Amino acid sequence: LVDVCELGVMKENNPFRRCRCVAPGERVHYPVYVFRNPVSTALAAGVTLVPHEHNLLAAIFAKMPPQQIADILSDELLVSLGSAAQPVIERLTQNPHYAYQWVSADRLRLLSLRNRKLLCSNMVGILDQVSPEVLTSITSAL
Image (cartoon, rainbow, N blue to C red):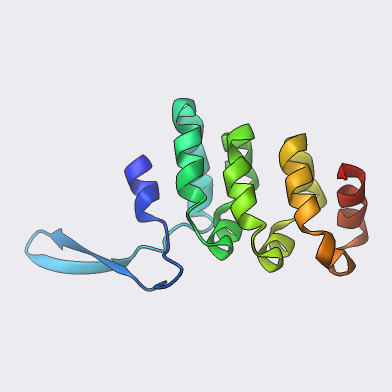
């Protein structure tokens, strides 16, 4: 699972990087940027099965650009990572635009208090763009 996650990290400076894989009798290409819903749901199931790897997997996910994190960080994956999600949330908040796209009142409730405060404190600059429900959740977390 760790090796698969490493392959899923899209490089910010080259989002169209491709891996060459040898299939029997031919060469095939596939994009490394593969983790999006519904794949992220299956990914969350795999993460749940390896709790001893949560910190390592979170570190790998934190290498992804915020846009990719917003795409893959489903509720299921967030719950699977638990408190190990902190570096992933930190990376997501580096671009408030993608954090704004990702956040919801329900997702804020899924975060640990520490991660909720981290996310909310980095979204202060865009409070005028969030829904009233999310705004209430953000202000109560702060």
